[in-house]
Length: 476
Image 1 (cartoon, rainbow, N blue to C red):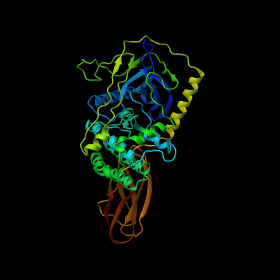
Image 2 (cartoon, one colour):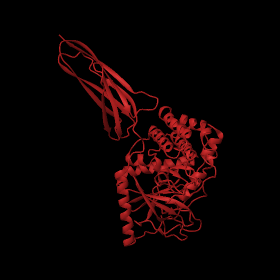
Image 3 (tube, one colour):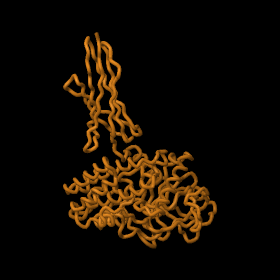
Image 4 (tube, helix red, strand yellow):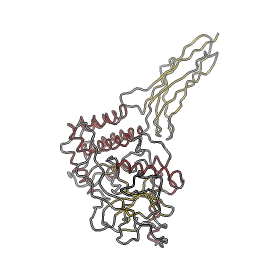
């Protein structure tokens, strides 16, 4: 966000924008040329005051993680309002992401370095370490997928948008959803960046299964233990850095200048921070009860350390070490003069229209990052004996992780050889799905029927999910 203060030490937005499920991102730059990013939230998501309060709390929690030494997250500089708009400012670029590098296709000429199995392993171990630190603090990411794993300028992996989606949609932290999403990320990288190396791809598939069954820490340890099948020298991240520079949207950071054409952020009255920024000697915790209506000017510290989490972990084996976030601060200026809304040009209107179209397209085609997982199958039947010529209803309940998707299952009756296979579609947000089998019995005599329900997909690797129930039929 730019300000009218002498010295011009505020953000300016550069020409590159991209949309995601929470709003419109813009690449940003400070007056001294250091790169960052700004996210303008979809107004519908921040219209509810309660949603704004949850968003503020999530950002404050993120900053406390940084102050506590948790690395691997894109650092948040501030959360500000400009009129009715709410902006998140980051002091590291929020792109490109793993999703960007995957969707841009194989970069560069044939034979040039590309992300490989070692690149995938580095991304996975760094994201796992960041998630473990977040979970240890009682928090969660909430929206882990390739589009929120940022590749920084030195090739390290940083997680963006931690806790933002959960806050805006009113969801409680769910570390298990992060673990399922990390396993999905591992499988995706095994099928793409590691596809040319069968042994390494097999390792990534195994650690994905380990995460689903045993958790994130054992999966990280299995990845560290399998380093022998990975390409030598992969911890230097050379391939990721080379890919970054060939990425179509790459903007080389400059010092002392502004990359590309820059434009000021929309002026909707004065820019006000939503975060309390205490002085160095203020005993109150960051984000305490007081808030100040101040125009905030963002400044950046030096870049990230040359050796971060992954290299330390690979060298130290299973020891959990964490890298501090880049040093840097946030300077708060005195209260600004109120500024009137500047006239909008035709070009600005066209740019805004394109941004809205991109946001709508992404909204329509967005799919959940976390894959559907079924954790348990329960089957029940009537306990009382059933009378003559009756239809018995057998009920099955499939417990899930709340993600949406397709589910396939099979009923097997004890009186028939042929099973009954069915496919259902589960909506996102449902933690369980009920299925039923109707079994008609006629005639005189006694009969004991058993129905078995077996999950066909998605099935956790190494597990068989099924259950059965029995009923008694009597007719004389």
